[in-house]
Length: 405
Ligand code: PMP
Image (cartoon, rainbow, N blue to C red; front, top):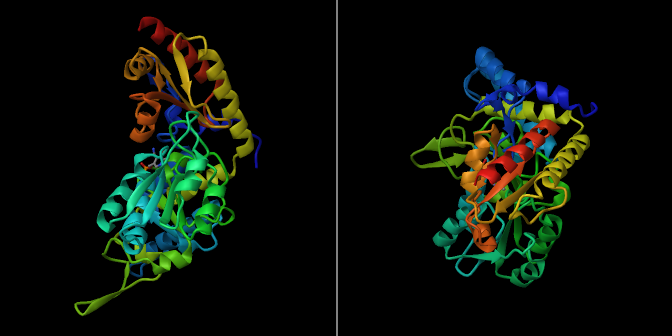
C-alpha cells in the first residue's frame, strides 16, 4: 500500500474543492455519508456509458459482461470483510434494509412469544425499530442493554439480561453518536454460549477498521456503501451460510425463484433467494470500486491522520464556555458536543454560513439522547480526506458562532 498522502487523496474528491456560502467547504459529516472519489464516480459513468444491461437474464454479450462484473463485485465485498463464501453476501439498499431483512426472515420465523431480543441503548434507529416490528408480530420482547454515563455499554447489565430467553443480540460494532466501539467479540461469544445469535451493525465500523466476520464469528453483519465512499442505495448483508439457507425469502419476484407455477414456487439458491428484482448493478460495481480504492490506502496512516485532526479539533474548542464533549471515546473518528444554554441547531446554522458542514440533531438515536438527557448534539466526524485547514476553519467558526449566540 502507498504511503498516506493527504494532498493526493484530496485531489480525488471533486466535491471537496467547492466553496460553501463564500468559504471553502469544510466537510465534517462523513459519518452521515462520505464524499466519493473519482474512481467511484468514473465507475458509474463507465457502467452507464458502456455495459449497462440487466444481470442474470438473457444471453447477449452486454448482460454476460454486466453479470460477471456484478458477481466479481460480490467477491470484492466478500474479501473486504473476509466472509468464507461469496454466497454469504447479499446485496441490499444499505444497512437499514439488511437489518429489516434479518428481522423479517430469520427473526420472524424463529421467534415466539416470550423470546427476547437484546438491543443496546446506543443504537441507531435502524437497529431498534426492525426488532420492535418483529417483536410485535411474534410476541417476542425487545430488551435494552443500558449504557453508562461515559457512553459505553453497561456490560454487567448485558450479562444479567442475557438469559435463555434471549434469541438475538443486536449491537453496533461502532456507534454513530460518540463512536463507541462496543466489545462485540465478547458479546458475540456470550450470545453463542447461551444459544443466541448476534447481529452486528457495521455501518460506522467498516470505513475505519478492517473487519473479519469469521474472526468475529458474527452470525450477521451489515453495512452501507455510502459510508465507505460508494454511492447511496447499495449495501451488504453478510450472513452465515447455514442461517441464510434455512431462512425463508423476504421479497418475492424475479431472480429469487427457481420455478414458478400456480401449484407452487421453488426458490433460487443463495444469494439469489434474497435478491428479488433488478438489482442496483451500478451501485454494486461502484461499491467494489470504493473498496478497491480503500484497499490502496495506507489505512493505518489514515486513522492516525484522523486521530491527529480530531485531537486538534478538541483542543481548539475546549476553551468555549459551557461546551461539553459527550462521551469522548478513544480512537473514534468522531465526537459529539453540546454548548449548554445554546440550541445545537442555532450553532449548526451559524457554522453552515461559514462553510462548515456537520450534523446537528438526535442522530437517529432517540433512546441514547434520552439517556443523555439532551435534545440533540453537534457531531464532528472526520474522514481521511480532511485537512488541518479544515479543522482550523472549524475551530475559528465555532468560536465566532458561540460569541454571537
Ligand atoms: N447504523 C448506524 C450505526 C448508522 O450510523 C447508520 C447510518 N447513519 C445506519 C445504521 C443506517 O444506515 P443507512 O441509512 O445507510 O441504511
